[in-house]
Length: 133
Image 1 (cartoon, rainbow, N blue to C red):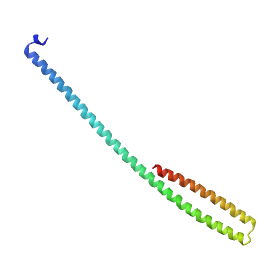
Image 2 (image 1 turned 90 degrees about the vertical axis):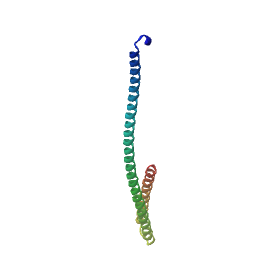
Image 3 (image 1 turned 120 degrees about the vertical axis):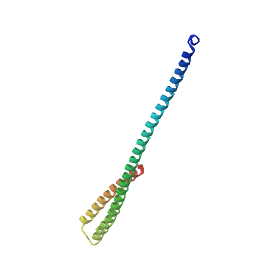
Image 4 (image 1 turned 135 degrees about the vertical axis):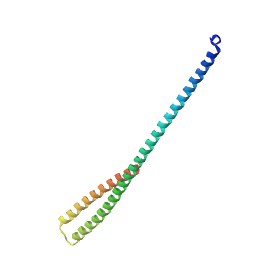
């Protein structure tokens, strides 16, 4: 087929083939460059999102630590109050207080014990949350 064509047409045909191949190569390079740009933009967006999430995590960790310290302080205060209440009840009982006062002291002890138990449970939950963060 090519041998029957004029020589100048055959040269032009090869030139057209080379030009087409070069155009395909240029298109391929441009597509790679666009893909690289898109990937770079996506990476930057993901990096910004990750930084935002890290800041949110830091804030949550700080809040949980503050709650943990608040619970610890409340626990210490409740323990101190329960000791005082028990000492006062014991003194009243020793001084010949009525059986009703003893019963009231026991009820107070049970209530303080229950409050202390609730504080212990809340402290455990805070520790779990802090461990997850």
